[in-house]
Image (tube, rainbow, N blue to C red; front, side):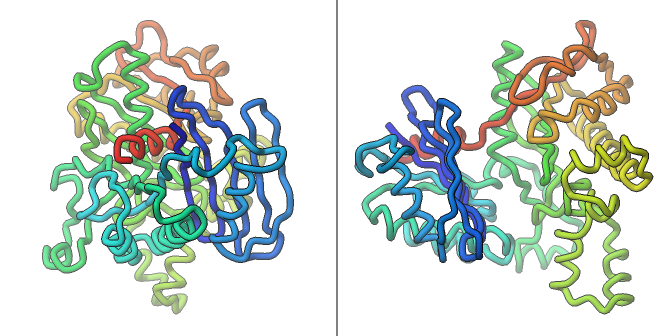
Length: 399
């Protein structure tokens, strides 16, 4: 059984074709800068061969045509025809309160996803475009499923997901904490239990998905009980360009002083803040790290804020669950930035964490393993995430 996994953005479309017999990707790639000048198509084959070429794509329909051609023709051909694709699984960021689990896509479901655009204006409209374009190119008969970032967090109790605003706004507009990166937190928490050789239902875990977008989740006995992102992916702690949690009065003050509209405020908070805003150098942690090593004070401050906030959330979630059995680092930064892991873990001695510096240096670039000391009361792991596989598994179960 072959599942095509799609992760669409407003100007991008990433894909993987996964063979569910061995749960391995037969091909992966992406269409970048859709609708813009300089659009490109990228693909990677299991043997490591990488292909990149310029390809005009004015919309998502043309991007799906590019994917279709790549799957069935030329040097990237991995199947004989589209009939070998059994279903398509789409990553959808926001499912709201109604769509709290993965679903097979119908016209009604598509309308629900579209209706949640206000809660995820940068994401849900792009997912709707992709689903419709997929139907147009691959045909109405091919089953499609929606797998929601928010679904894993639907188990949070009210005291975790409710904001202390007038209750009427929750009733009128569904204003609450939803959480994101759910497929990643779900995958690594299950993988952590496997590595530990213990049932997930017995473990208290803190999973740290750290990348350009970041979130930390408290996973108690297999269920998300709290997570750092909120109504949108802006909340939580400092990210590449997002500010994370700040005093709302600071935003109101700046709106008044700078004459910001809500749209301008959203742009500053989402695209000009975080590591980029503090360092003034880049949103990429590798660039900020290089500047910090060279002695740049704002780069040093940016990295210090990030580490401090990660530690705070870990401590908060250990308190929320009345203990923790293991901590997991994943995501581009979590999997590769060993100095951040060392700093965070060496400041968790109150939890009984001890640290293995040599192991920490080994586990980068896709390697997984334990980085805590043999006598550590709390285990610490580096576990590469695989969100696409979660989407494929969910899609297989539905289609």
